[in-house]
Image (cartoon, rainbow, N blue to C red):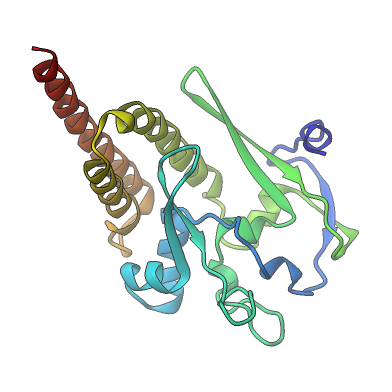
Length: 232
């Protein structure tokens, strides 16, 4: 299945066909809706709440099993497994500020990185809902949700996650469990909560990514010193 989907990659201006029938099925029992800092900030402005409140109420912060990077997923309601923003009429309460993963559906977005360049492409996911009576492009689809800068956001965020993953996976095995957990907790705080919602986000995300890298560099130096002392 994955191999077949990868044969049909879409660029931003390629065409695909889909019409949403607003059944709400894509908003239930989801554990795969990852939230970037851009998503969290858009959500915070939409519900007029502070970032820590939004993360606590609507997000689940955890460490990626493979990446070892702190990640945030959208938290479903415990009583019925639905998205907390899904209304009784199957409409989204924050429709114009919904997470990019939700806005893109039925598209999935991926990135590959070669020679420090991030390449972005889209996959049309198989789905039993809606029909194929409308023609769209990923760029036009994103524009309907005020996500014109979404590719740039995604590229910036993917670069940060990929680099942090490499650095963390290398240093973490050499750290005591408690210290490793503190490092990951601090990284999560920097990446997701250190924002001024009234200022441009891309520059802030880049700065927070650099701040997280500097923290990892300090940890790497401390681990290196500890290893040298242990061998002396």
